[in-house]
Image (cartoon, rainbow over all chains, first blue to last red; front, side, top):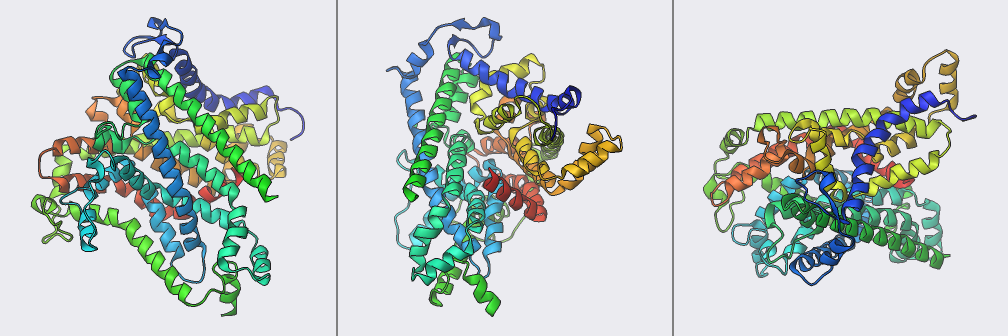
Length: 299
Length: 290
């Protein structure tokens, strides 16, 4: 690591990755921003685009059906993201403790089972859960019946469809976040628990005042990844609900693809993509700010 | 016994009464059953007759398990061809990612050049970009390159990714400078050093990246669906599976759909079963260092 490296080996090492990322990531990103200010049909070349200023943004935030559909998708995605993160984070810590503890055997086996659902293609997850949720011949309502609970309508009611997709998403992803939580638990020095025990702290206090504060970095990382994963939900919506019933599962990835690819309204779709990107940046910055405040309070 | 007690002190549950052991055990079993149930239901349903899949209340265990559904799936969706497409897409993409990540990871870890840290930060930022944000122009772009509709259109945009570069750079930083300098003294070229000195010292990371990339691109749905639209002969198995569902509509063949799902799930799960250690280690190391 002494002097600057010669130019030739640097080009050899970096050009494959950087030229691919340039063509297939950076250029499309710049084009998305540019197209958001254009009227453009996805069927035509980029040269056919016509500058329309902020018209696309006015449309997607306006009072017409374009605006209502987009705002609906934005709200649905927000609810879905909030629901997923709110369930995944505490659940991953609870499951992490089950995997990490050494009092009872079976933790590692549990990790294997949980992580294997994360390896399962989302498309298969969506297909299986659509059958599990089936109101008449599905096993979930049958099991509810056993314990005397009324059947749920799951994916077929606008009140419960989005929540039902949150559940299948949590089932698929929680294994990954559990492994992250275990990694966080491993980082906590055993001496801190011993000291707290000597001071007479019971297990619940040790969890609240030792474990949880020391896991805030892990939890921040998990939250960021969970948010980014949540806005990508597509398969269950595209395959099973098609955005319904009555638009209740119309989420952004599905909606943007429908507008920008299927209806070929490339400019309009791009303005939605830019809005999603900005919303995501705001959300992640807010998460970091929140984590910093928690950190300051802890000191 | 004393070793056990010492270890148990590490746990936040330490020194709780023995009742806690039973509660923990119950929780582990309960979670394991809930987690495994959907996949078990999938396999069981694939072995049922069409009438059994439609029964109310549901039939849990098929009366006479049959593999008919698997035979029929193969006929309906060209399962063999779809499997081959999935294998080609996942394998070639993985090979590309390994190569580009190893080279770029080496440069970011071991070369000193102006703008390195900013460039690396920009690369890392793309890791957080949801694919939908670039989907529309990317769809047009592969059209310009005349690779839409084919396997190359699915593969090319994914041959390099930020996660791979990040993972490689993290691990290559730990390779001793002396090892590399010694090879340079012997007159080895930089490429030789990457492949013959650096790569062998980061094999676990390469294995982890290979497995992640393979499973991710085997399972990936949004991009192949968009770029292959209508070219059914090039569909990977996950997209052929979605055609099973439309074939299924109004007919009694949930068993077919579940047989297809079982087939699609097998390759990632088999890989995971054999190489679990690498998966878990790399999640842990990216989580901690990230």
